[in-house]
Amino acid sequence: MADPQAGTTDLDDQYQRTVTIHGREYQEYAINHATHFMPVDEEEADRLEAQHQVLGLVFDDRLIFPPLDAPKNVLDLGYGAASWAVEVAESYRDCEVIGVDISPHLKPDDAPENFWPQLDDLNRSFTFESNSFDLVHSRLVGGGINKTRWPSYIRDIKRVLRPNGWVQLVECYYMCQSDNGSITDTSAMRQWSNNYIRALEGRKDPRVALQMQNMLVAAGFTGIEGHARERRIGDANNEVTQQAIDSLALFPFTQLLGMDIESYLSLIERARSEAKDPLLKAYFPLYICIGRKPSQ
Image 1 (cartoon, rainbow, N blue to C red):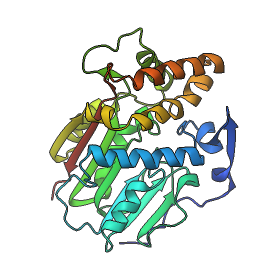
Image 2 (cartoon, helix red, strand yellow):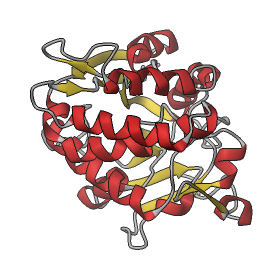
Image 3 (cartoon, rainbow, N blue to C red):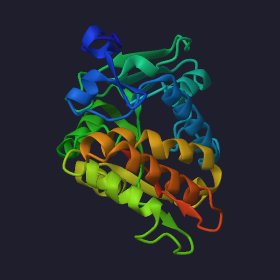
Image 4 (cartoon, rainbow, N blue to C red):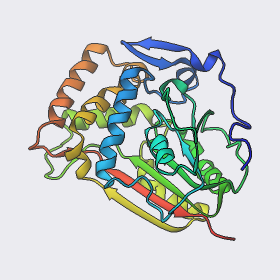
């Protein structure tokens, strides 16, 4: 494979600068370009690592869902704190793992030598050569991919995959639900969901988790399988959910919707109370989808 750093963006000051909003640090470039609206501080790095551990429980400790025994080249799109990428690099020492993210702030200081973090905007066409990777992994990037970008994003993934290579997509639909129907439109968690979707709609696609299989079909993938983990995530990750309710929403609610901080904090407090109530059985549906690039 060619130099893993070739064609990527240099790490200059514009990508390093941050702004503080209501006590959280955000990447100035991402905010100014509406790339994503997530914090990039140590608190967020800790949340993402905890989220990775919970997803390990949800996925029965499976990092890779497609039938790949010994991948040699893996691409992780939107690597965040690099938890998944680092674990894959440590599990497959002969595999080169490249991670791409627009925000370099959360990458670990110590990482395996076979992990290569790169800086780039996933809303732009990939710079990688065609037929380069055995696996492309894309997890929880829905808040960072522009709504109109998704079809070409999937086509880019297919292009850089080797023949018979696999894509693994994981996304969450942040419309809170419950097993027993106790979450209604008057619930704080449902109000949180409606506000989150309203804040992102038009910029991003908050319902993309429901469309992944159709997008893979449209792009010409084969061997497509989709799985929903709708209940176990609510049972396994109460603490992570408590953190996510704030991290996901602070900028969209206060800056995009114009919610004053007092109203915001009140909604978050009520939503957190509902999220940890075992009688409500609240959860966010999580979807996994894999597909294979044809050999021809």
